[in-house]
Amino acid sequence: MPLQHCLRGVDGEVDMSFADRVAVVTGASRGIGRAIAEELAAGGAAVVVNYAQDADGAAATVEAIRSAEGAAGVFQADVSDFSEAEALIKHAVTEHGRLDILVNNAGTTRDQVIMLMPEEDWDVVLRVNLKSAFNCSKAAVRAMMRKRYGRIVNISSVAGIAGNPGQTNYSASKAGLIGFSRALAREVAPRKITVNVVAPGFVPTALTNDLPDDIKDASLAGIPLGRWGEPTEVAGAVAFLAGEAAGYITGQVLNVDGGMVMA
Image (cartoon, rainbow, N blue to C red; front, side):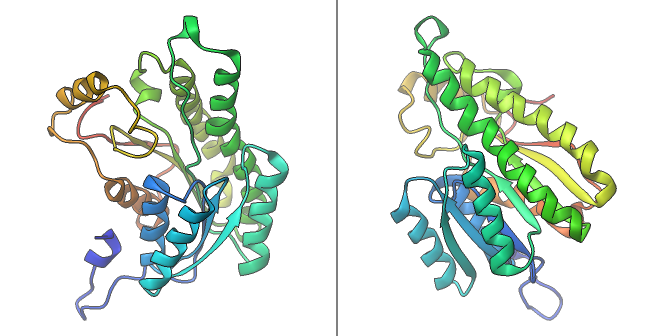
């Protein structure tokens, strides 16, 4: 159940904390991205659902939101390409007249030990996971600065904090996202724009389904809460950082990992 459905005032009405807000969620055709899009829409935001290749998944996300009486549209863009990321942000602003929330969630993996990792696998992971956030944020900040308001939430990973064997490319990209977010937070704070990071732990998605069973078992053994996370739990953290209650929080990393990384 989306977090916003649980937040009710004394009159019993759902807290529409994102009413009149416009959000862009990249990589929202499935998994964590879809859960985030649904969460923000449940709070009243008009959500632009971005996807690169999975048109059916993106359509299913939009349908789920609309079935719950939320507002959503879809826009295809490979956000690792600057011109396409710029087109996505331009679409959101043109369609809705503003952009309040950007969630940089687009990501991919190409796991392999470094001795066997092709250069292309390094490049594509850094491009999709890190450069995409630069591309979208650069375009979004322009719109947000004019309104003197904005929330940017970047989806990193505990791999970017603790590192994972066989994931030097992924861990580097996610660590880079944290440094990027903190630097950007300092740049845009005077314009009342916050930039924060959510770092999920092991949340079963299409990206993690192909991991070997021994890695899955080892990760479970290292989680103090004794279970894997759910996409909706990550979405709840994103919704908090994107909301009004988090207006005095910026440049921070919120781990949603069941206690895997306590730093």
